Image 1 (spheres, chains in turn purple, green):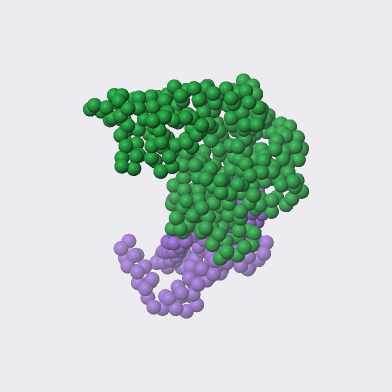
Image 2: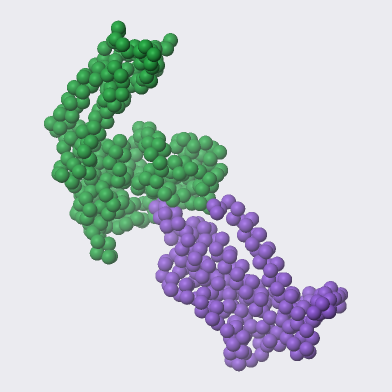
Length: 220
Length: 347
């Protein structure tokens, strides 16, 4: 066991492991690229949906149940399914990652919108704001902390799951996990897993800090 | 002036909130809508700025049918204050007050300058303007709510239980401030409350509603207290409505005489002739002198509290002008009561 961790340490810090097209630097960039693009696309779909449901109060059923739907969705199954339909392309990876991210964003956006004090919304309307002014000047800014939490959760989940890109022969940090498994190289498997975990935790901490900095004026 | 003409409001769930309401709220006056919960008073208020639209009937503000106006524009021309202040938690106090001017396109600089002016009007410091609403007390938040409603200088102000959530001391202060502001500004105010004392204190006219959205009586406070239309109104006004009536009559017409000499109790004055206390051998009781603007009710109270039965009367500077006896106050209280009760609606 001790030997394994010692080798892992050597693997992580060795210079050649960090350079080249199979180097950690390149794989990390790929991994982040998949994750950010998928989260961005998911946000483009989920944010308007969550805001609309929250503002109108219609479709709340969808917003609430999407969360459990998202948890129940087998990501690998989805990858295989789209892979069979689309052949060898990045489509299966992005479809699966976006499907994973959408529920977290919709649910949190909706929760943020419903948490806005009804008196504040009433006052906004009563001062003469039109519906889009109420939405963008009052509801959205007030829901923003929870919306950002949704985006953060989605991104973390996506980062942790983006290893599946390697499952259908693409890059990212998952490469080490799947290659290591194929080569029975436990150090490489562990190295890939540790890197994914570190990236996820680092992003989570960084975004939490950003949220705290942005919303320091808000009541607790 | 705000006119309700045969206004009916039925909600989709079948409840009738307002039943065949015809009512005029005079320009530059405070009309208070009172009644227990579910009597339609808040719905009535909210129909003025189209937060609720009537099922039938017409509502006119300044002669114009509200339903023919764009709802958002109408609301910008009417001040709106609600119970929990409804301030925007993510904006500073100053920006909260500047809301309507900004919606009207005044530009940020002009809107902020106006907001700063209003901070002072409602008795807040410039420093409070930089804070966020949650950093203020409940009473201060309500002041900000009032300032926000006044920002674009609307002729009409709608106030929905604005002081309902603050403690009695602060509430009384806020009422005084509103009376002072109204003297300066002469807005047409519609004020909703379930507190009859607040209604008597603030209202030029009081409209009493009964469950089911029926207007029972609308009259000046003195007339309402003296001649309630039916048992419902009498019950609502409470057993002390006679005393409430005395709270509306001032001490100005009650004669005064010189302070009593040679009795056991002496009125102690300072060098500016301001009453300090009632003194007898070995004892001193604080005195609460009254001005001509104080009410007969306050005089009655003081005459009971005073050991001598005399009420000390002072001028605006607090200097003694004379005293009035308990008997004299009683007599005037009785007179005030009967004159209100028999006089016409002119009061």
